[in-house]
Image 1 (cartoon, rainbow, N blue to C red):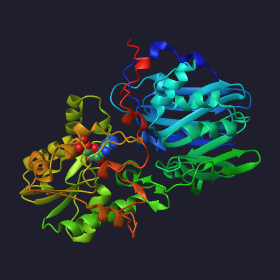
Image 2: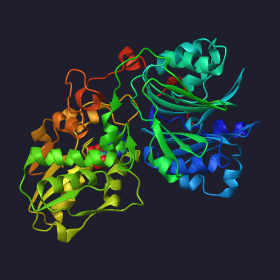
Image 3: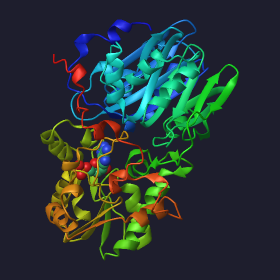
Image 4: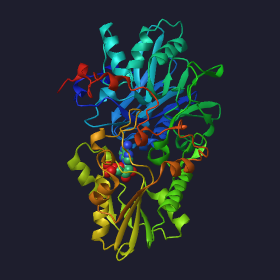
Length: 491
Ligand code: AMP
């Protein structure tokens, strides 16, 4: 590591961070411009995490790291910075913390020096038994440097009795529960792994002879790499000078890819598990149109997340699509703002009515989801003030009634509008003439799960159904605090 001191400097602690986060990961093996490609890949994955970014490279002798709070483009924007990350192997991470501040000590990739050499690791997902594991590890004398659940892997790898790095990583993975797509580098290897359920995405790509691992295919496109295949749920891939090796170290189980990746989280130009995200969003819009059948003059998306579904809705219904709301792109996602007050302000900063397309019109507004309801209330008010005659809200997901514990940042259940209110009450609060959510069957048809098995759906839809496919060990134990008490240093 080139300057480990700055990575763990206590002066960067603010102690006000949360246990889990949303993220994107990228890794590249044997490329002369490994760090520059990683920075570009992370730029394409920026939507998965906007609060911090980091790259660790290995040059054959030493690991090098640059990690910073903020966007990729603001932190990996000069040849000078890229030059501090030499070597032909690199991994990177973008992070999107939940409530509270992001602190540098939690910015990934995390790095540690082991008996067998260094290892850097970047994680997308959320472990559901991290608190219990961490408590046990601390009792054994492990000293944690961050509040990130990812650090649990580091300690489990360190205390493993495995005889080589792959055995140690496997040993660690067998102890954790939850959702994870990981990339890691050692001195010789690039490693990628998806949890047995495959909740978060991870794809394999190639550029020339170089292997790539990425959360989404859009990061392959940006560097001109070809898509090879998705890493399979429960698969561990190890890439070294002898090529790519695939291991299946877990007991096989049903896969449960996160359906919300299709609805909101992944980039529309990505293909995830063989399905194009944009196409699926359009399909959901078409399903909504079939289910709603509302008469109206215009279909207006809440930009940007509602756009593909609104196109699908308009195509299916024959009602003209209009950009009746314009988004200012220089404001981040409203969710990212740390307080309700700022979130409210954020919505105003972000959207403006395109008046003449709304005035005296019967408007169908399309958004991908209602979480707290903040966005919908503001947007509907804006559309009404612009003179709309009727406002109908159609949502391209079922009501979100449960929090996610697998790596999507949703607030506590009490803050979820649909967990607190019935449909009619929501309609009144949002102030619309009608409110429709796509049905479960419509959603499943749209993602082409034609034979939807209602008993055992092939996706994780816990945020809509409350059916959590992976045990919530920490939550159910009732012991895990929201913020890790081990590290509540306030500075
Ligand atoms: P809310 O205002 O709380 O109802 O949030 C709804 C808006 O947030 C929708 O426009 C979604 O596109 C967006 N959204 C949904 N889920 C998330 C998430 N996990 N992170 C950030 N934004 C989200």
